[in-house]
Amino acid sequence: MLESRPGDLFQPGDLLNNTYRIECLLGRGGTSDVYKARSEISGNLVALKVLKQELAANEDFTVLMAREENIREIRHAAVVRYSENHRTPDGHIYLLMDYVDGPGLDKRLKQGPMPAEDLLVICRRVAQGLQAAHARNIVHRDLSPDNIILRGGDPAEAVIIDFGIAKDTNPGAQTIVGNEFAGKYSYAAPEQMSGDTDARSDIYSLGALLLANFRGAAPKLGANPMEVVENKQKPLDTDGVPEPLKSLIDRMCAPDPDDRFQNAGEVLAFLDNPDSGSLGDVLDTPNEDATIIVPQT
Image (cartoon, rainbow, N blue to C red; front, top):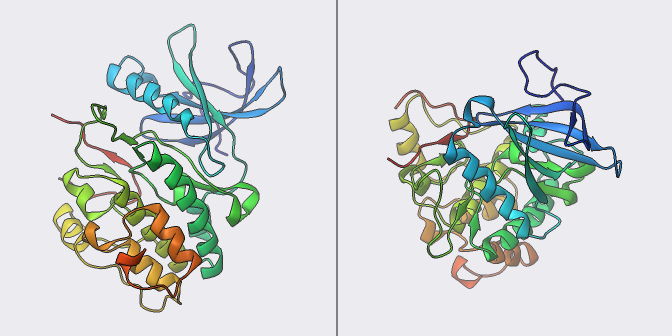
Protein backbone atom coordinates (compact mmCIF):
# COMPACT_ATOMS: atom_id res chain seq x y z
CA MET A 1 0.00 0.00 0.00
CA LEU A 2 1.35 3.40 -1.01
CA GLU A 3 0.53 6.89 0.15
CA SER A 4 -1.70 8.76 -2.28
CA ARG A 5 -0.40 11.84 -4.07
CA PRO A 6 -2.44 14.75 -5.37
CA GLY A 7 -1.43 13.83 -8.92
CA ASP A 8 -2.71 10.25 -8.72
CA LEU A 9 -5.49 9.55 -11.16
CA PHE A 10 -7.79 8.09 -8.49
CA GLN A 11 -8.03 8.98 -4.82
CA PRO A 12 -9.38 6.94 -1.87
CA GLY A 13 -13.14 7.31 -1.80
CA ASP A 14 -13.57 7.79 -5.55
CA LEU A 15 -16.42 5.74 -7.05
CA LEU A 16 -15.88 4.24 -10.50
CA ASN A 17 -18.69 3.03 -12.74
CA ASN A 18 -21.09 3.56 -9.83
CA THR A 19 -19.67 0.31 -8.45
CA TYR A 20 -16.02 0.30 -7.40
CA ARG A 21 -14.97 2.40 -4.40
CA ILE A 22 -11.23 3.13 -4.36
CA GLU A 23 -9.60 2.18 -1.05
CA CYS A 24 -5.89 2.73 -1.67
CA LEU A 25 -3.04 2.70 -4.18
CA LEU A 26 -1.22 -0.63 -4.32
CA GLY A 27 1.61 0.16 -6.71
CA ARG A 28 3.01 2.49 -9.33
CA GLY A 29 4.52 1.13 -12.55
CA GLY A 30 6.07 2.52 -15.68
CA THR A 31 2.89 2.32 -17.76
CA SER A 32 0.13 1.88 -15.19
CA ASP A 33 -0.87 2.15 -11.54
CA VAL A 34 -2.78 -0.45 -9.52
CA TYR A 35 -5.47 0.39 -6.97
CA LYS A 36 -7.37 -1.66 -4.44
CA ALA A 37 -11.13 -1.15 -4.62
CA ARG A 38 -14.30 -2.73 -3.29
CA SER A 39 -17.48 -3.46 -5.19
CA GLU A 40 -20.39 -1.67 -3.52
CA ILE A 41 -22.70 -4.30 -4.98
CA SER A 42 -20.99 -7.55 -3.92
CA GLY A 43 -18.60 -6.23 -1.29
CA ASN A 44 -15.74 -8.10 -2.97
CA LEU A 45 -12.28 -6.61 -3.19
CA VAL A 46 -10.78 -6.10 -6.65
CA ALA A 47 -7.60 -4.68 -8.12
CA LEU A 48 -7.83 -1.98 -10.77
CA LYS A 49 -4.96 -1.47 -13.19
CA VAL A 50 -5.23 1.95 -14.83
CA LEU A 51 -3.14 3.15 -17.74
CA LYS A 52 -1.13 6.25 -16.92
CA GLN A 53 -2.74 9.48 -18.05
CA GLU A 54 -0.06 10.31 -20.60
CA LEU A 55 -0.51 6.90 -22.28
CA ALA A 56 -4.31 6.81 -22.37
CA ALA A 57 -4.38 8.19 -25.92
CA ASN A 58 -1.60 5.88 -27.16
CA GLU A 59 -3.24 3.16 -29.23
CA ASP A 60 -0.36 0.71 -28.73
CA PHE A 61 -0.87 0.72 -24.98
CA THR A 62 -4.68 0.64 -25.10
CA VAL A 63 -4.48 -2.41 -27.37
CA LEU A 64 -1.99 -3.93 -24.94
CA MET A 65 -4.52 -3.49 -22.13
CA ALA A 66 -7.15 -5.18 -24.29
CA ARG A 67 -4.80 -8.13 -24.90
CA GLU A 68 -4.14 -8.43 -21.19
CA GLU A 69 -7.90 -8.65 -20.64
CA ASN A 70 -8.00 -11.59 -23.06
CA ILE A 71 -5.71 -13.56 -20.77
CA ARG A 72 -8.81 -14.12 -18.62
CA GLU A 73 -9.20 -17.32 -20.66
CA ILE A 74 -6.39 -18.81 -18.56
CA ARG A 75 -8.17 -20.49 -15.66
CA HIS A 76 -5.79 -21.60 -12.94
CA ALA A 77 -5.52 -20.81 -9.25
CA ALA A 78 -1.86 -19.83 -9.71
CA VAL A 79 -2.69 -17.19 -12.35
CA VAL A 80 -4.43 -13.96 -11.43
CA ARG A 81 -7.92 -13.83 -12.90
CA TYR A 82 -8.72 -10.90 -15.14
CA SER A 83 -12.19 -9.57 -15.72
CA GLU A 84 -12.65 -6.75 -18.23
CA ASN A 85 -11.62 -3.25 -19.25
CA HIS A 86 -13.68 -0.18 -18.43
CA ARG A 87 -13.38 3.44 -19.50
CA THR A 88 -14.14 6.42 -17.28
CA PRO A 89 -16.23 9.33 -18.67
CA ASP A 90 -13.02 11.32 -19.20
CA GLY A 91 -11.37 8.52 -21.19
CA HIS A 92 -9.17 6.68 -18.70
CA ILE A 93 -8.97 2.92 -19.21
CA TYR A 94 -8.74 0.53 -16.28
CA LEU A 95 -8.60 -3.26 -16.11
CA LEU A 96 -10.39 -5.24 -13.43
CA MET A 97 -8.69 -8.25 -11.86
CA ASP A 98 -8.81 -10.33 -8.72
CA TYR A 99 -7.27 -8.77 -5.64
CA VAL A 100 -4.65 -11.12 -4.21
CA ASP A 101 -4.02 -10.37 -0.53
CA GLY A 102 -0.49 -11.19 0.52
CA PRO A 103 3.15 -10.18 0.18
CA GLY A 104 4.96 -10.22 -3.13
CA LEU A 105 8.19 -12.17 -3.45
CA ASP A 106 9.93 -8.82 -3.92
CA LYS A 107 8.94 -7.91 -0.36
CA ARG A 108 10.19 -11.28 0.89
CA LEU A 109 13.42 -10.70 -1.06
CA LYS A 110 14.05 -7.48 0.87
CA GLN A 111 13.52 -9.35 4.14
CA GLY A 112 16.39 -11.71 3.40
CA PRO A 113 16.95 -15.32 2.29
CA MET A 114 14.02 -17.73 2.07
CA PRO A 115 14.20 -21.42 3.03
CA ALA A 116 14.85 -23.82 0.16
CA GLU A 117 11.80 -25.86 1.18
CA ASP A 118 9.49 -22.87 0.69
CA LEU A 119 11.06 -22.07 -2.67
CA LEU A 120 10.47 -25.61 -3.91
CA VAL A 121 6.80 -25.25 -2.98
CA ILE A 122 6.63 -21.90 -4.79
CA CYS A 123 8.34 -23.41 -7.83
CA ARG A 124 5.77 -26.19 -8.09
CA ARG A 125 2.85 -23.79 -7.80
CA VAL A 126 4.22 -21.24 -10.30
CA ALA A 127 5.23 -23.97 -12.75
CA GLN A 128 1.64 -25.22 -12.68
CA GLY A 129 0.44 -21.70 -13.51
CA LEU A 130 2.97 -21.38 -16.32
CA GLN A 131 1.87 -24.73 -17.68
CA ALA A 132 -1.69 -23.38 -17.96
CA ALA A 133 -0.51 -20.17 -19.65
CA HIS A 134 1.89 -21.90 -22.03
CA ALA A 135 -0.86 -24.34 -23.03
CA ARG A 136 -2.58 -21.30 -24.55
CA ASN A 137 0.69 -20.11 -26.10
CA ILE A 138 1.01 -17.20 -23.68
CA VAL A 139 4.56 -16.44 -22.49
CA HIS A 140 4.78 -14.08 -19.51
CA ARG A 141 8.20 -12.53 -20.36
CA ASP A 142 8.42 -10.58 -17.09
CA LEU A 143 8.43 -13.25 -14.39
CA SER A 144 10.19 -11.71 -11.38
CA PRO A 145 9.71 -11.50 -7.61
CA ASP A 146 7.37 -8.50 -7.86
CA ASN A 147 5.08 -10.45 -10.18
CA ILE A 148 4.46 -13.33 -7.78
CA ILE A 149 2.24 -12.83 -4.73
CA LEU A 150 1.91 -15.30 -1.87
CA ARG A 151 -1.79 -15.28 -1.03
CA GLY A 152 -2.05 -15.07 2.74
CA GLY A 153 1.74 -15.40 2.90
CA ASP A 154 1.48 -19.10 1.97
CA PRO A 155 4.10 -20.40 -0.51
CA ALA A 156 1.60 -23.04 -1.66
CA GLU A 157 -0.77 -20.22 -2.67
CA ALA A 158 1.61 -18.32 -4.97
CA VAL A 159 -0.14 -16.39 -7.75
CA ILE A 160 1.41 -15.03 -10.95
CA ILE A 161 0.28 -11.47 -11.73
CA ASP A 162 0.92 -8.81 -14.38
CA PHE A 163 0.80 -10.30 -17.86
CA GLY A 164 1.04 -6.77 -19.25
CA ILE A 165 3.87 -7.56 -21.67
CA ALA A 166 3.03 -11.23 -22.19
CA LYS A 167 3.63 -12.54 -25.69
CA ASP A 168 1.00 -14.46 -27.63
CA THR A 169 2.84 -17.09 -29.67
CA ASN A 170 -0.24 -18.38 -31.48
CA PRO A 171 0.20 -18.36 -35.28
CA GLY A 172 -0.57 -14.92 -36.67
CA ALA A 173 -0.72 -13.24 -33.27
CA GLN A 174 1.02 -9.91 -32.86
CA THR A 175 2.95 -8.73 -29.87
CA ILE A 176 2.00 -5.10 -29.49
CA VAL A 177 5.36 -4.02 -28.09
CA GLY A 178 7.18 -5.85 -30.85
CA ASN A 179 9.66 -8.67 -30.68
CA GLU A 180 12.51 -6.75 -29.07
CA PHE A 181 13.58 -7.00 -25.44
CA ALA A 182 10.87 -6.83 -22.80
CA GLY A 183 11.37 -7.85 -19.20
CA LYS A 184 13.83 -7.25 -16.34
CA TYR A 185 17.56 -7.59 -16.85
CA SER A 186 18.01 -9.43 -13.54
CA TYR A 187 15.64 -12.26 -14.42
CA ALA A 188 15.38 -12.30 -18.23
CA ALA A 189 16.74 -15.27 -20.12
CA PRO A 190 19.83 -14.65 -22.28
CA GLU A 191 17.86 -15.03 -25.52
CA GLN A 192 15.44 -12.32 -24.43
CA MET A 193 18.23 -9.78 -24.77
CA SER A 194 17.94 -10.19 -28.54
CA GLY A 195 14.16 -10.44 -28.60
CA ASP A 196 13.81 -14.24 -28.77
CA THR A 197 11.20 -15.55 -26.33
CA ASP A 198 9.36 -18.80 -25.76
CA ALA A 199 8.17 -20.91 -22.85
CA ARG A 200 11.77 -21.75 -21.92
CA SER A 201 12.39 -18.06 -21.22
CA ASP A 202 9.78 -18.16 -18.46
CA ILE A 203 11.44 -21.31 -17.10
CA TYR A 204 14.75 -19.43 -16.86
CA SER A 205 13.14 -16.44 -15.14
CA LEU A 206 11.47 -18.67 -12.57
CA GLY A 207 14.78 -20.33 -11.75
CA ALA A 208 16.56 -16.98 -11.51
CA LEU A 209 14.02 -15.54 -9.09
CA LEU A 210 14.17 -18.68 -6.94
CA LEU A 211 17.92 -18.20 -6.66
CA ALA A 212 17.51 -14.51 -5.83
CA ASN A 213 15.06 -15.26 -3.05
CA PHE A 214 17.29 -18.02 -1.70
CA ARG A 215 20.22 -15.59 -1.59
CA GLY A 216 18.11 -12.68 -0.39
CA ALA A 217 19.54 -10.49 -3.16
CA ALA A 218 18.95 -9.92 -6.86
CA PRO A 219 21.79 -10.98 -9.18
CA LYS A 220 24.43 -8.39 -10.02
CA LEU A 221 24.88 -8.29 -13.76
CA GLY A 222 27.22 -5.38 -14.37
CA ALA A 223 27.26 -1.62 -14.75
CA ASN A 224 26.42 -1.34 -18.45
CA PRO A 225 24.44 -3.21 -21.13
CA MET A 226 27.54 -4.88 -22.58
CA GLU A 227 28.41 -6.41 -19.21
CA VAL A 228 24.80 -7.53 -18.78
CA VAL A 229 24.80 -9.33 -22.14
CA GLU A 230 28.18 -10.92 -21.40
CA ASN A 231 27.18 -12.11 -17.92
CA LYS A 232 23.92 -13.52 -19.23
CA GLN A 233 25.92 -16.07 -21.22
CA LYS A 234 27.39 -17.53 -18.03
CA PRO A 235 25.67 -20.12 -15.79
CA LEU A 236 24.19 -18.73 -12.59
CA ASP A 237 26.30 -19.19 -9.46
CA THR A 238 24.47 -21.80 -7.40
CA ASP A 239 27.36 -22.62 -5.06
CA GLY A 240 26.03 -23.27 -1.56
CA VAL A 241 22.47 -23.95 -2.70
CA PRO A 242 21.24 -27.26 -1.22
CA GLU A 243 19.91 -30.11 -3.30
CA PRO A 244 17.53 -30.57 -4.97
CA LEU A 245 17.09 -26.79 -5.36
CA LYS A 246 20.60 -26.44 -6.82
CA SER A 247 20.06 -28.99 -9.59
CA LEU A 248 16.61 -27.56 -10.26
CA ILE A 249 17.94 -24.03 -10.78
CA ASP A 250 20.93 -25.27 -12.80
CA ARG A 251 18.59 -27.09 -15.19
CA MET A 252 16.10 -24.22 -15.40
CA CYS A 253 18.75 -21.56 -16.01
CA ALA A 254 21.17 -23.06 -18.51
CA PRO A 255 22.28 -20.17 -20.78
CA ASP A 256 21.41 -22.20 -23.89
CA PRO A 257 17.64 -22.76 -23.96
CA ASP A 258 18.15 -26.18 -25.54
CA ASP A 259 19.97 -27.28 -22.38
CA ARG A 260 17.12 -26.28 -20.04
CA PHE A 261 13.94 -27.97 -19.02
CA GLN A 262 11.91 -27.51 -22.18
CA ASN A 263 8.57 -26.87 -20.54
CA ALA A 264 6.86 -26.49 -17.17
CA GLY A 265 5.85 -30.14 -17.25
CA GLU A 266 9.52 -31.18 -17.10
CA VAL A 267 10.03 -28.89 -14.09
CA LEU A 268 7.10 -30.55 -12.34
CA ALA A 269 8.41 -34.01 -13.23
CA PHE A 270 11.76 -33.14 -11.66
CA LEU A 271 10.03 -31.90 -8.50
CA ASP A 272 8.15 -35.19 -8.32
CA ASN A 273 11.36 -37.18 -8.72
CA PRO A 274 14.54 -35.11 -8.17
CA ASP A 275 16.69 -38.23 -8.52
CA SER A 276 15.51 -38.92 -12.07
CA GLY A 277 17.93 -39.09 -14.97
CA SER A 278 19.31 -36.44 -17.25
CA LEU A 279 17.55 -33.35 -18.49
CA GLY A 280 16.50 -35.15 -21.64
CA ASP A 281 14.52 -37.58 -19.60
CA VAL A 282 12.09 -35.39 -18.28
CA LEU A 283 22.16 1.77 -24.19
CA ASP A 284 22.40 3.33 -20.56
CA THR A 285 23.30 1.70 -17.30
CA PRO A 286 20.43 -0.77 -16.88
CA ASN A 287 18.04 -0.67 -13.95
CA GLU A 288 18.05 -4.36 -13.09
CA ASP A 289 14.74 -4.23 -11.21
CA ALA A 290 12.79 -2.25 -13.79
CA THR A 291 10.63 -3.81 -16.48
CA ILE A 292 11.95 -2.67 -19.85
CA ILE A 293 9.96 -2.57 -23.07
CA VAL A 294 11.72 -1.88 -26.37
CA PRO A 295 9.04 -1.22 -29.02
CA GLN A 296 9.52 -2.66 -32.48
CA THR A 297 10.83 -0.08 -34.95
